[in-house]
Image (cartoon, rainbow, N blue to C red; front, side, top):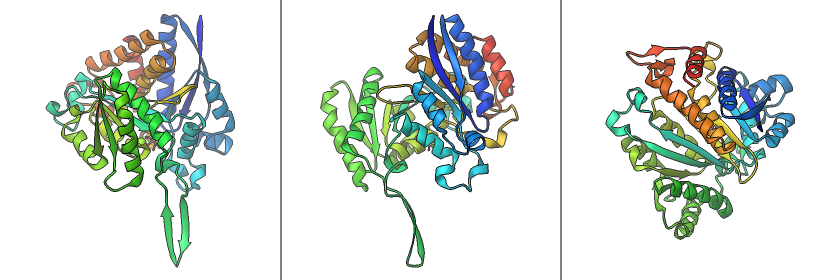
Length: 357
Ligand code: IPM
Ligand code: MG
């Protein structure tokens, strides 16, 4: 039987709750579809700070690099807000992305018909939205040097550097072009080229590459306009190509089109080696341990892992179908609750998902 080694990173907050559900579902679909998943859990983020004194222990990174795929729930806790930056949970996630060389972050946003009423936007605006944010993940202002805080002339200054090399732009743009040609053939590259040199380079590189992808129609959009267009007319978008910071912001905005960030999965990929699959949402410390979390984004991330990371298409379809079925039957966690639906906790939602597999 085919075996895949999967590292699970439950992390912090609601992470362990939603990981338990994804694991159960993965065990069932793998058996049913004739392959075996060998799981190994590792600490990351706040749980790793508690266990090992650092947010990404070397053993966690080594296990992830040696796996066939990595499934991460969420990291972060206000308990660590006062630690120096390199000791905080978020730094563990950034170090994992860098350490696994995961430069391409794919965040698909697709409206689930039964959730159309859960969005804060009108149904006629969001009906049929199906877009993909392709976010550069290991460069830009998140990693640029120099950065820091200095005292100068009795004042204090904080600074970061937004920087991209042509080759960094090229490799993420290639990913976006390829995905656009497999989808509806439209690529919108997001930048701030009216103000930023780094964005002008970004735009120039996308233009240089455009002729090689004759089947893709390319447009450029300033990030402020993109933020507006996402809520004005999100259906105009197929693939959105962004740098690290712009993609962070726009993907949260795009997530809300679906009614809840609790629905959005993501995949982070490099040019070789295992991918990292994780929900777009965070660790939700306010509801952690209360059995209130929405496990859907985690389950959909597990489905992305099966499809993209492990090439187990049929099993991925089965997980996604289970999510659709449970939603269509009117089961909702608190974040998506609306009139006429039945509200469930995280565990009960997991049981419904298992039943509908
Ligand atoms: C995300 C998150 C992370 C990011 C944080 C937790 C470091 O917001 O994955 O979007 O900014 O990339
Ligand atoms: Mg974010």
